[in-house]
Length: 403
Image (tube, rainbow, N blue to C red; front, side, top):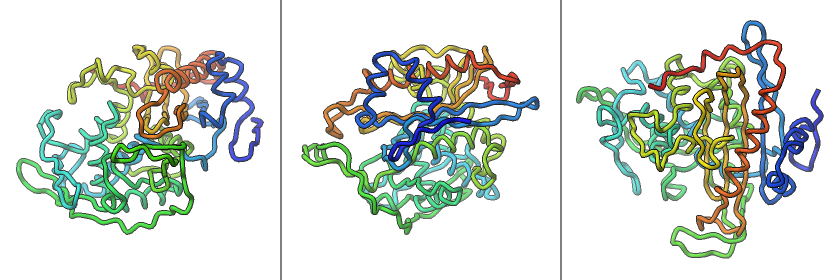
């Protein structure tokens, strides 16, 4: 039985607290001793298998508080991609799938069309290509297009119906106001020049709960690049608690481990597709093709890789979705070491903004944020390497062909 340390709002398991602190460098100790400054949260998910290889999960928490807001940034792209695949499966009778060409029209102010995609083999955009970009390099425009396909209201209501009541996805990653984000574009699916399905414009009538004011920092730059000497208001921004992010990731990788009501309506090809691109590295991708000096292999792999831009060992894969914005760094990952038969999940967030000014692009990602993820990830990984298991896991299900 784990011992939980109770603080006013957060929850911490003594086991994880002790494990991290006892192995922490002076650098990490200094962060751990300033929880209010760095607002870190960590969830370590231990996985044990039975003799039939069925996995069982145990979450350990360190300073986790679902009511403490952090900006989820690109982590919202994970549920957005899953809802898009789920919606496609509901439209399969119309002859469309994730590989079908999808043309986005401009239907309201500030909207932009997409009629081609030079990064794809066919030169046309598709749900599949957008999802590839989301996981390979966390592409913002790809997310925007899936947001538009899903529709704000449909996306949120589907997530809430699965029990994720605190998730809120209200906006694209482009400058738009609240009303503009409620409007989503008309979309056409075509094959060989023939129209298969046209999705009309949509408007979201959903009522979000914005009663809790969320103010961060002591100053911020507004959209006109003017310094405003008041905290930045995140009240209407996207919200995705770390516990929900961890659970969504688990539901994708191990769908039978969560209640049926929490699973996404995906088929076997969807799952293989997701596993491929959640773990593939930019250098392994041909379409899209990336400049690996900018998009290096650990570009979206924070836990024990990102700091120093290390090469990722060939026998280790991270199936993950990170996010970074406004000084917040987040990652939720399933780590697999095929050589040593090790597997575990780890999710975390840290806030690195020494000057307290938002939107000034002065955040301590390189010197503090990424090293935090690297060291915490290494501590858990080294523990897992030594941890006795009754049954060695068979991890072949997660072996992909990246050639």
